[in-house]
Length: 568
Image 1: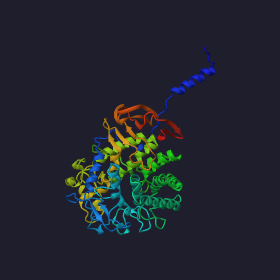
Image 2: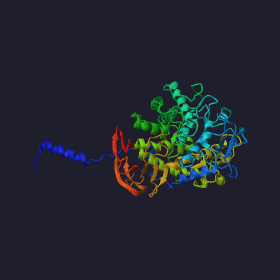
Image 3: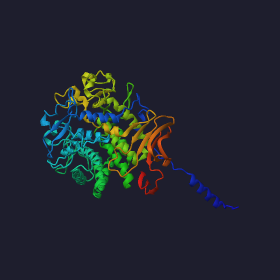
């Protein structure tokens, strides 16, 4: 019999404790704005966003679709920037600024065509060869080389710039088409000419960041003269988030360390702002970039600051811009994105879709926001259906009698608490409406139906799936995580109930091991087909399906299986 000294006994106990101790779960971050959102929004219905996005594409991109105000596409033969005809897509139904009979067919917006191209691509439509037409190649014409800007812009030329929609005067409108382009480029890397355009965009953004040198306090930037500019529009410091996103994507694609350096520098500039500068769509990309640069490049960005700036609705210039919360006359509208203050709140379809692009993918790099993003996405995906006339009760719509015109695929541009139109002032909140009639003289009431916003539905369609438990969603973390390294299928699940729930998950026919990045453990081995995931109340899980029996290793802050990163 071996006798242990006191020291030996203590060491033995410590060794046994180390052998049996399990990792502590990832502590979840708190976003105060989410506290006023319903745990279970009512009335609850998560529609099939994947099917809706595909239906939008097949209906909107059909030259033979008949009916009042259809078709929504036309040919533009002006051949600006590149010697090819392109297809235009209406911004709103029957927008009198657009179409083949107005302004020589030149006026169409990248927000619409690029958004619709990306949206369709995300739900499995090959837009490079759709019924004999290459819609992806046509996007090159938004690269404004004729003006010397040499970036993607919202229009193809200055000739129609003042008709509306932003061009060369409103910074986010000039930056965001490049963010959209890079998302599309990730899916069509072999499209002729795209490498060159992507490289030239990155060079412009790199040079612009050098000129700005830590000062993004401007209304826009002239990428031809390489000078910042100011006008009556808000100073848009969050353009730095768009620069960072594009430059980091370019770094991952081309490997030029200058792009990485300027991506970091741009985001540092935004982080150092003394107050919220959220303007339109770019701040959520700041949160994503902060999390990703922390995880992949060892940076120390304050992700919480970017998340609060995205959600809080307290920017100083774009007053109220953020994420709406509330239940209006029995209808939960929490989660939609827009003005939290305009006439009691005014959320927009495109902004709601597009916020999901960076925020869901962000959880892969920072799982401490899994619960926050899970709760927000449940509310947003539930409320977003009310933009569509078939889901919003007639008494909460401005033109319910025109519902058939949408063919079930075009939603209203926005949802507002109190209508901005005197003739609809009697409607009770929430009110589905759009700003189209205010954009141009003669725009009909149906221009409240937003083609440009509806085209982005594929973002939701690629991310959201329902599960066996109502209210518990499966969110695909890889769907919009562009220019990433190789990764295994990764999904976020969030239980909004107070009590524990068991969700049956289909993991496929091939065996997988399942790693939960929240508990930091493998929770199942060699599982195939169905797996029963037990979720404690108000808790998330982030599951990664890895090859069974794969070689597990740790390099720096990464856990790898067969040399593929599973968790940061």
